Amino acid sequence: MQQTVASAESVMASLKSFALETQDQNAKQMFQSMAQSQKTIVDSLNARLQYIQSQEPQYKQ
Image (tube, rainbow, N blue to C red; front, side, top):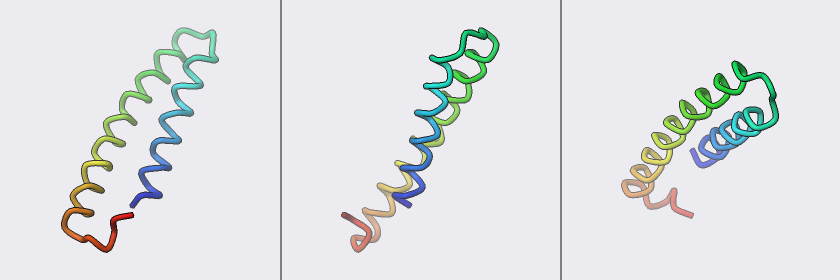
């Protein structure tokens, strides 16, 4: 689960980077929108991870 969260955070960082690097305003808006959607996913995954860790202490690190 922690690996999934890390991967999702990496995708979000890449999308933000793409938004900063492009000069195309349409592409910039698309990447920013996708990054915001990915943030929602990351937040959900983090909440789920915290729940799992609270219910299953063997998963804490």
